[in-house]
Length: 91
Image (tube, rainbow, N blue to C red; front, side, top):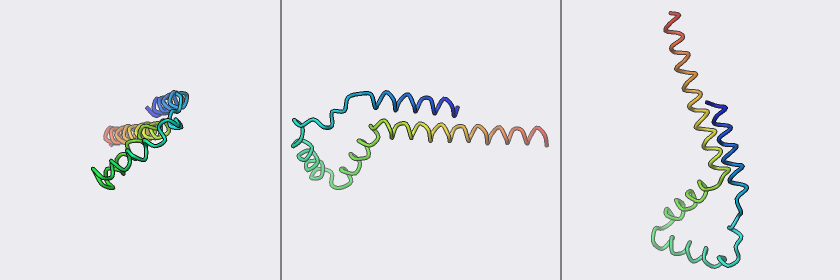
């Protein structure tokens, strides 16, 4: 499970970093400022914070970290329950 998690995270990161980065587009330079201001007016600071988190979740590095952490937790749970089953059988 852990190996599959690492492999999946590596593939997601590799594919995500190979895609073209359009965040440097000069034609959209003023749009970000206006969109951020509109978000702050409509939803306040919490809306801006949630939008920042949402944008962070779209980054391939963040997605890879989430996959690795989830795989580690699942593998840890498998080892834990396997140890419990082994101690019940021997005891």
